[in-house]
Amino acid sequence: MSLKKVLGVMLASRMAGRGGSRGGLGTAALLGGGLGKKAGLASMAYLAYRAYQDHQARGAGNQATGQTTTPASAQGGIGGMIGSVMESLTGSQGQPQPAAPETRTEGVSEDRITDAKALLLLQAMVAAAWADNAISTEERARIVGQLDAAGADDADRRLVEREFTQPQPLDQLLLQVRDRETAEQFYLASRAAVDPNTPENKAYLDALRARLSLSDSEVQEVEALTRGA
Image (cartoon, rainbow, N blue to C red; front, side, top):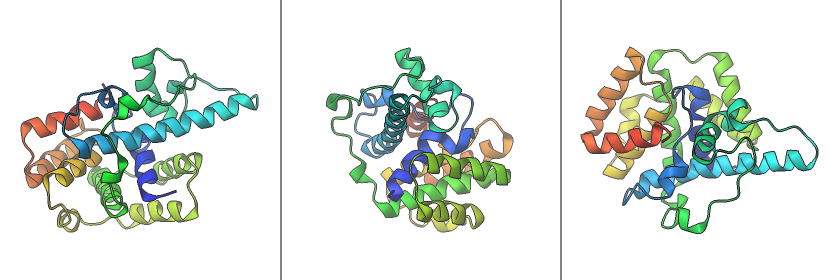
């Protein structure tokens, strides 16, 4: 599994539910049109959507072998997070969905996100998750479990555990943000990792927005993704 795939799983699951009650990125709606020229944000949404598709494909394999499949919103991991959004959009109840038509993802590519950027965005998620000093051993175990369910290998698990154990200082991470696209991606990763309704997380996101010099419209575009609508 590449760093990009690890990032996709983390975005799709939104750090085991830290991102709020809806969960998941609103990739299905946004890949159908709505991000305009925001190719950087669309690429992140696409990574999350691919992670969701992989999860659905695994579910189809389980059905073929006679294993029971529950509705996506009732499952843990990716199915419980991004799956609840897909159900609200499609009316599905845990049935594996076909791959998105090419027209749904036209002009959207994960190639805009290099492994180096994927690592930066993973580190942004971890830094944000530490904002309220509330990452428990149990929570880390759930996240690693989601990676395992997506086919992560030992190296992937070690990388994620290392980042949780030794989170990078925000000042150091921001030195790597040198353009508007990366600034928006960094904010999206951070926003997706937390529940913005707690005072600590709200303060962190407000301060991050200021340090990234994001406009109101840029923040609204990120919110459109993280609301899962």
